[in-house]
Image (tube, rainbow, N blue to C red):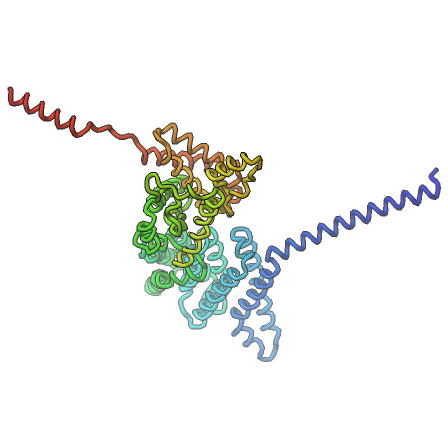
Length: 524
């Protein structure tokens, strides 16, 4: 039997354990709440609630007013039904956004712009219904939304948002009593078919007529679907052709409108289309022209990296054009002190001979910061800044680190490699990781005495493994399989650049052979 003192001691221990468990649970709950607040989700939820309220008001404005004459219940019931439908649709859209574009949840400005665009499109649908326009004209706002989301985000995201807006548009058509359920579903199917074709064709915009071409094809699809659905509904040919013409004409008109609005879309959503990238890839651009004149070695180096990285990106399905144009601008910071970089130095003239390793390190590392300042000064699109900022990641300036190690070892002191590392950040996209690796292997291959295929392959493999083990690819979603494919592409491209050449005979020997041949001919 336990004594009273032992029982009190045992109960005190149990009480202490319960208190510790309670504190641990409370601490865990507090940490979860903090993570929830830091994620930006609360503000995003409030914005979604505001969107549901505004969308419901837009859809039921006239209907609710009609219901207020006499008995308020019909108007309130309509408002409640529309609000409930909008709530369920919007919750689904919110979950879809969180799953596929989390940055919209985290960036409240992006979320506000997205919801504002959707509200504007709902207003357009509502105005069309009030003016008794053809139901098939809902393709116009849905197509505009689809093209905007494809340009700003991705094809998959555009499909989801277009489906949401299509369902809301059909909900808006319910006000028009002349439109049957079959007609509403037909308008949704025709709109969905045309929008889906447009999204799938709009993978990249490399020409100024791309949007118009895509919308013309989508218009043909909408027209064909309208005819098929009209035959299914047993409609007469004349109104059927008229309805199809309205749908197709609206779809084609969207192409011309969006072509004019493309610069505005890029500015609002802070994106850069391939067409804009092509504009910035020309050697006549002021910053690139200055690079060619003041640092020709760096200019040539950047051009070669552009070719290497574009081929490597296309090998794994990444954006090759973005890699190429980003490579052109990745080393523009060397314009500030071009003679301190080996590719711009004259023979036997090394500017670092008179400098300490620490001072040389500051100059070399400084070209990243200088490059970002130049990009901002020349108003280069922000999507290209990542290549300047991350093309060295947090790697070590190896040559000057070894020089400093030699110097300090004589004094018996150790030099930490952290002092000779670039400030970063590390690459966060596949494209920036490709440019980082291409930059490293191009310089190493150029420094080789005899760049044979086997030596090039060894250099590429070693460079990739060093950066992998150093954690330079930890923040980008590059897989080992993709890294291997990038290595194979780089080896193939470098072997083509540094291929073997025939050793031509000297001019004197060639002239002598020609003279001997002439003498032999004359003798004959």
